[in-house]
Image 1 (tube, rainbow, N blue to C red):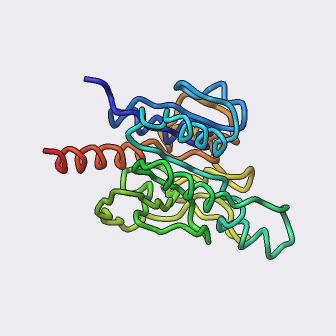
Image 2: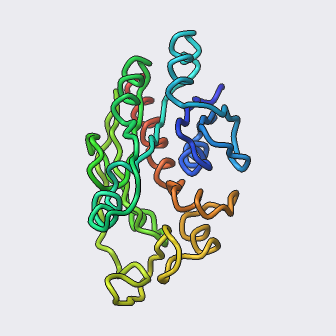
Length: 230
């Protein structure tokens, strides 16, 4: 039987894609940057242009599900909080709305992922590393189109994220998989904490979704789909 296929848009290094593969999907990625460590078939180019072309040509029909992680720097917590208060950072483009518009046109069930912050997505699902026994918290919100899942229980965090914050150092069971210095995680620590082994590029790891998140989403989606068509 042919495996269901997921289109992994704004794919970065493949954290989301790996989770979908673990759930039983074949994966095709698309990212505007060169991603030589991406572990699946991959198109380099603008994700929205590529999605529009797939819709126009009808090639979108080979997919069962679409996942999109559009750039989030415009409204993530760090940008709208600390960076904004200090006058740091530049102008960032918010691609959530045009991504949703095209995904609606595609006719596919879809997932849009964003970090905690002010990104304008429905928070149909929120996942945390503690739900999967990971060494990061890395809360992520997901808007789900044309399907739904039950929100799993959010376990109490077991302690602090290790590192310096506001001049105070705290130890804890989680590592900070972002930035440099101040007790932030090393590359090997990030790899271990998130279950990502195929890239050792610092910037790719700091942007990555732990594969456990999309493995859970993909497995749940396939279970719901099977029940609907049973």
